[in-house]
Length: 508
Ligand code: XMP
Image (cartoon, rainbow, N blue to C red; front, top):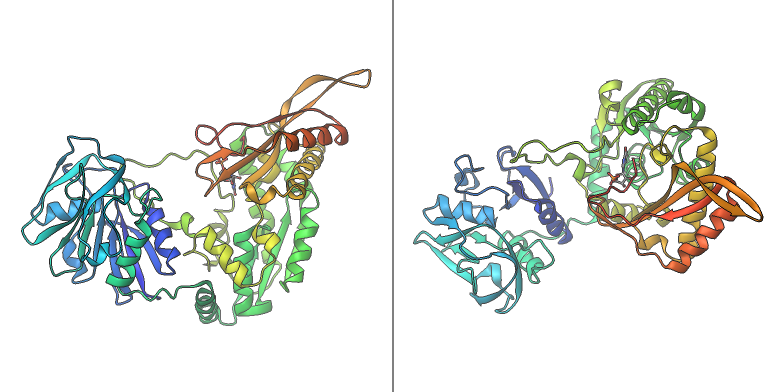
């Protein structure tokens, strides 16, 4: 294992952000639930205790045994700081004044290694309902704001620190400096966790793990599965067989283009045209979840059949990334399933193969950096996310081959327009939606009664929240004319100006 920082999650919405900030320092870190983390091994250089929606004063407040960490450096953030303070003899009470939002440090103990280089007056960001009102005698306050006396503290002559503000959010201006002070100066991490090192370690590990075994992978043309396949290919070469299924719901010409670029990378890939099988499975289905399930089930059947044609396969490769595997801590009840994503989720259980997932520890932006270092075409690395069920969830209502062909044309005009106007990289994801309604129009002297399409383009960081992209009106106007003039059957184009939440990115 590379040297690393462990982040124990008490359920804060910012826990993943802490991990991303540490990773940005080229230091490896992992998130574990506060009540379920591995034995502390010598590669662990420090511990971070996250924030939480809970109060340390709650009867069943999430707790952790601090003794387990020995002399390792510990940084408690918000709830983590309050928990440490309370457990060691200090006190935490409900705040009397507002401790939410921007604040300025009014005093800073500069000799403290955690706060080195951070000055009085710098902006930090608070978000808590409780506050630390007293510390045990062996602790000292190292920073305050006008309203929060114990903004930061430390246990004298140890590497145990607490802060009540959030260094991981960008509103805390010296936040990254503070995390660097902790991880580099205090924990002694070397900052050598780079894409190049990741590739070297991963390929080495894959060689050991897979030996002369055969691996099969489903590729989608997306960033994650492509980078995962290139890593496995680097380790075992032609013992990796890749399958790319045309489910009839891909973008225009995508099947052939993607196959060609995979072949160009030297991957051993088979394209399987299963369009008619998917259309048959979808016939008459209108309900979004029913369509997703039919697409997922058909995919598993096709992939399973294809995989069985390759003799002696014992592993299934997948492009699973870190946000998919972090066990989310449910301190406030189970989270609700809004849409059943990841339609290939059932694959490993169904196929009874061992699973190899070389990207399990990476965030999306790290996958792109690794892909870049591997020399993968920037056009593939920069592709917008595209859902597994593809155009199947962008054709509202039932799906037919004719509707797919129409939407492919509309989508193609929109996406190529974004590219030619230099707007493609400014949006996170874009596409067109075929609405199940007809509207009246007039073309020449003729009355028309044709279909309506919606265009959707969003800006986002991770797809969890999103805002509609403020594309220039001139561009939208040009695309609208181009679609209505060129795509027979469409006489109206609308632009979706909803943000997520309360809407979602996809319409189904
Ligand atoms: P929503 O619509 O939930 O989408 O705001 C967030 C992101 O997830 C993608 N998405 C899916 N991806 N299978 C997938 O593989 C699905 O069923 C699915 N539904 C939505 C969506 O395109 C966006 O990037």
